[in-house]
Image (cartoon, rainbow, N blue to C red; front, side, top):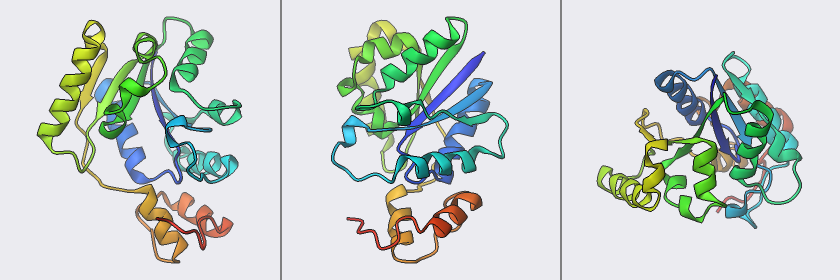
Length: 208
């Protein structure tokens, strides 16, 4: 079985996340894609996050219509900072060596990959799928990829660069719109839009 893992704060989950997951599933022939809401992402320490239960519920609503998608909430239940390598190690222990894990991340996250906890071990546990992101010129993307591949040249065959449709959705902008009472329709799945409105999420929130 081939499983994709897409992590993030998902605050909120938006259509860009779903597009990345579906393109990865189709291009890499993945059987499932797991969305993993981060508990306490150490790279974003000190930044306010919406309560975990709300972020979990928004992901559940977003993936409900796709039978190949699911929400994995283990990072929300784990105390302390969230590290991708710990999540992948848990999945490997649960599923054994026969399940092929593909960790999906954006170009922006890949740029700081060397700062992650145990990046070499992460590459042993899963293949990396680096998806293109808006705002990165092609030359800059190539330079970042080349530098990272050089650092991990022995595991370079475990890193795949995957072009996806360049749809520039921003969770920050969605929060800003919700805080100001402006429409963010067509940027998040409709059930997520309704949940945000019904729960009053981001209402009056100051977004810098």
